Length: 119
Image 1 (cartoon, one colour):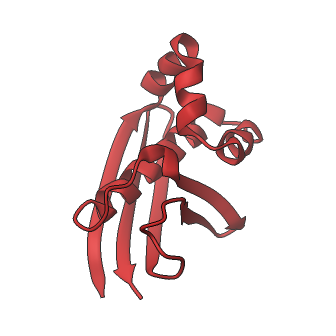
Image 2 (cartoon, helix red, strand yellow):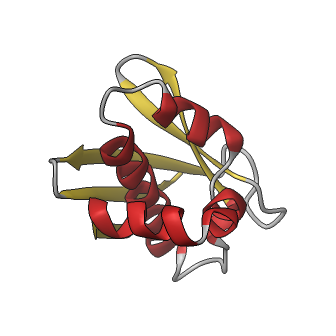
Image 3 (cartoon, one colour):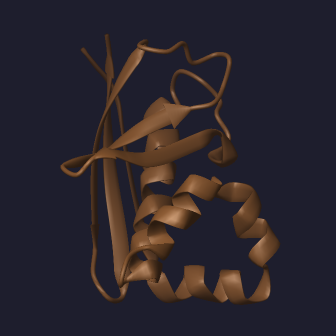
């Protein structure tokens, strides 16, 4: 059963400016796995902004059920076909939710949508 939907869009240049002026802020909001993954891509900033949007969309999809912080949401690539979500919050029990995630980006913007299903 679908329980929530979240979406986000962000400017790639905005995230890059935050990194240039406040790198410790982003290091607190991203997991090292997310930063490392984006660093392996040719379009590092587009990828990182897409991950940011994915994290925000997960938060929004959960917002009517649980209060989760951005720093508790981890986006990772388990297999080449799609991203996975881990929510590091004791209120979110493993296997409680299924996150259907779509991420897209261009040179200027990234966007993501998360559909939350209750298992």
